Image (tube, rainbow, N blue to C red; front, side, top):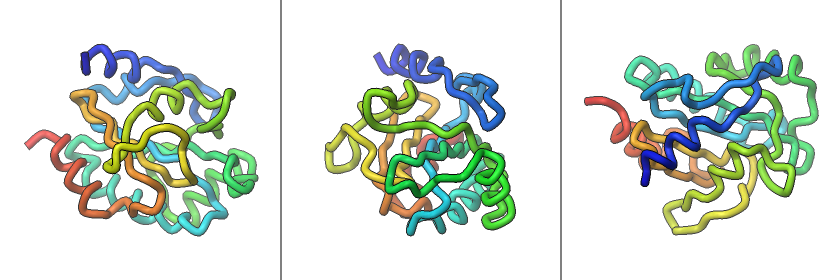
Length: 167
């Protein structure tokens, strides 16, 4: 069952910052950490930790990807050009930043509609609560969900990442 879910999740299209369509399947057997990001949020410093995860675990099979979202108090109002420049200049982000998405509601991006079916550690699923909610999609198809306040370098995220990477 997980393999079917994985194939379906990995085949859902989304657009990069230039509008080119991609799917998670392009990352092959890598673990993918998907995060809805925003430039004007109190949690924005998490960019630094996300970049550190990419640098630390990228060679071992992790790929971080960010999806800008302006649904939470308008905290990502800029154009894609402004967002990309901000991420690169302010935080040194090297991981891909995709096109802006909606993560909740009837117009939510299809990838997020699928991701929101995953439960977090407390067993809650459903709407994304705020900016910087994290979804780790493992190569085996398991989805680990972490709420926004959970920092990217929290022990539970590190443990989930390490468990999903090859030995």
